[in-house]
Length: 386
Image (tube, helix red, strand yellow):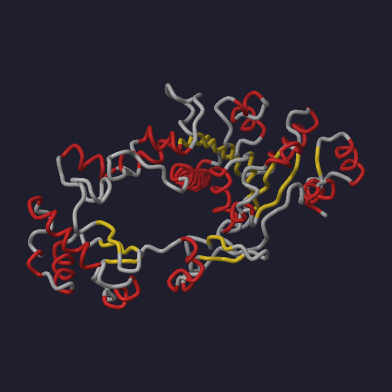
């Protein structure tokens, strides 16, 4: 049994943020139905990411037709949650905004996930992950040796926004148990990033030294909190911020003279130069064997290509292999009594259209009519079925 068994979520979305949010809930038992227009078959944005399609069902339905909207409203009548990631106002123009759907289903929890939110001067502005990171201040914390912001290789704002959307849905479900009514959730990916900056904001405005604020070779970094290159060209992270952990590491590395100079600006260059040379004397594997105590506060920088072979992640079942042999993230968090599960492989476009319509009471003849009109698209109508 999954923690969210019996919960039905309708997903109107073609991008990563909404898809990742509902994937987290689908992993824990929610029946997630993804609705996309038949014309999107050839350029589905999340099509290459199996994780965000697993444990879900897919319906190809044209919401720009009156018949298609009628089918969608039938689906919403029995839904618990709807997640959409359109620009502000787009769902309303389709007649599928919160006010309209909540009149049809007062218990519906409606989550809108956008870059800048539903209000504010930037609400209608187009953007992507990098733009949201820039506005939030997060990009300011990631700089190269010359002080220029760098472009990270993963979608920090998209995934943070997804997590907040999932949290908002769970909070609204809890509130519904008390009130009997659903509510509207306005998730901004920019807001999500800003909410993660509690320490940077506090440190910046109180003048507290902020370890790791920018690149290793800039004045704001500290020897006790940075990445060092090893003799074989790999890297190891060193992060003993607590004085007693730093003192212990210094003793183990044979430089106890630096134990009391952890945040001494005058000694910074000397300590870094010493540690840079020291870590170049051994390979990463040799350093891992030497720095293997629980209080060393070091960790190898693992390459993404090595994640499927990582012993810790394997023990935690955090790398799952799809039937096609593609590694993907496992299920988090881990619940003792109602753990998540892999129930369905990644859906194919239109795969469950007929199945869902049958569950809604549509006859085979009615499904044939909808197919002939182009309102729906079945798996057998796509190249993917062959």
